[in-house]
Image (cartoon, rainbow, N blue to C red; front, side, top):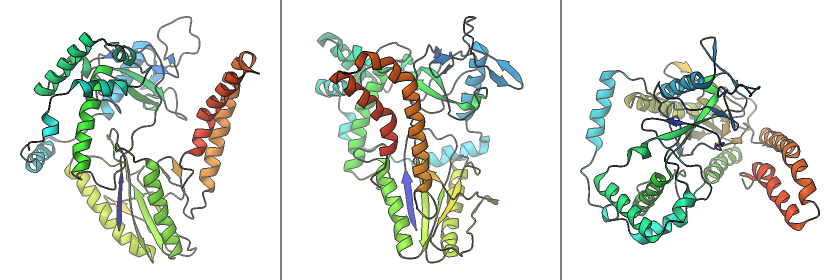
Length: 416
């Protein structure tokens, strides 16, 4: 049986808005923790969720316990929602067991030169050069464009700050704060607090230090072969297409050998970035594959229990890929509950089907491209046509815009 793991971050585009600071330490991305007395201004598609502006007609209220709330009250509801999904419910005894296990597996700190050296001026300038422009700032209001234009004296001061932080393990409190931007999830109710994906905007200065340390850490992990070869997320020169190609090739091999392949994609709650992984087994008969995969399912469930994690059984799906028309279903169970089966599962934004015909995926991306082109036609074309038509620069800009909006969704993983 082949075990496949993948780390993959959320693919969410931040929307500009007038969001306020949510106090307290915040993770970089994913479900942020929030205090009950925090009041982020809740954004939706660039508009605030009723920021108590009487001139705004189309305000969106959040429904909580049958009561419509807006403005700061809606922000409180969202803050409590984000806090709840960021908290793992685990009893005191289990929490103590997890702490003891962590102590057992921790090895004595080893001497790693690259992780103990001071940050050099060349290292700082190189990473500043690689910063992306026009990125939204965190609570400190410092933009990446400002960092790129720092003079020699300011760079020296910043370098001393980074080295002191690196040496002592302490960071400024403002680096632990974030602007929380709630983004509405497509197809979800706009009045339900769970329909909003939180995006955390943290300090660009803090992210610069993270970038420097991350490069050192990744160099150490890669050169020493510490990262599993089956992981693609957060690794240089590796993409989700690598995993998809490997996954699909295993399905093709099963078809050619007239075998069945049973796969499962668990959904672990409270993960921040790396939440996409799958494992499968290929055998001549689906029942044989079922026995192998079920053994792995039991181990995964035990692992989740040992570490206080929760697997959402309703979102954990199984799929049998087979060209055989007459074969018994291979139903898997987890914790005594039957796992749902899905004939057209979505893995890493690719819709598969049990015969691997690609028809569901083609239909899905075709509809997506049509919707995007219609939106572009309404919002972009009429605005720029009169200004840019019959000019080379105008036509080039229209081509770039259409490519970014429509063609990219058609090209994703098209080489598979």
